[in-house]
Amino acid sequence: MYKTILVGVDGSDTASRAAEVAAELASATGAALHIVTAVDEKAAAATDLPPGMHPLSPGERAEAIARQVAESLSYQGTVEASPAPGKPADALVHVAKEIGADLIVVGNRRVQGISRLLGSVATDVAHHAPCDVYIVKTV
Image (cartoon, rainbow, N blue to C red; front, side, top):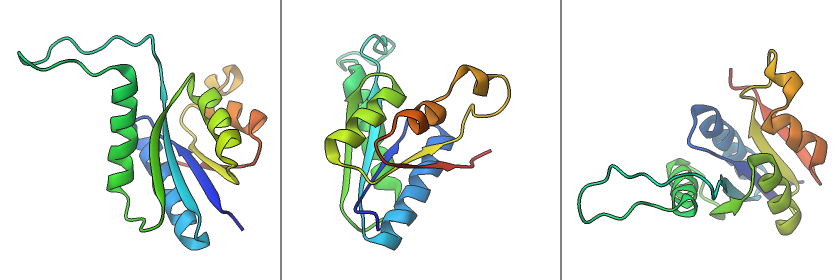
């Protein structure tokens, strides 16, 4: 069935729930799980750090989020966690093509109400994905 499952995370509860579902699907199918956080290179680094500590770059923050989510899951199979450049939907579609993902899992944050007319990550991924898309109902 599925050999490679990709899930996008951003540190939100919605994304964490999507990652849990992706891990359950990967476990049930024996698929490898790829956890990706999009990197906004224009984001400012934190400046209120203790003396002697350097601020994390946007890429380092994204990688830390992806790894933290990977470590929080009870999935025992193959897990990759990494940052990906670009806006979230674009990054997920790009990585899915790059790794040959069979399934992309995303949360449904902002898929209701007026914002669904304006677009959301889940909607954009569903329209452009090279594979199946599973939208996790999180609200």
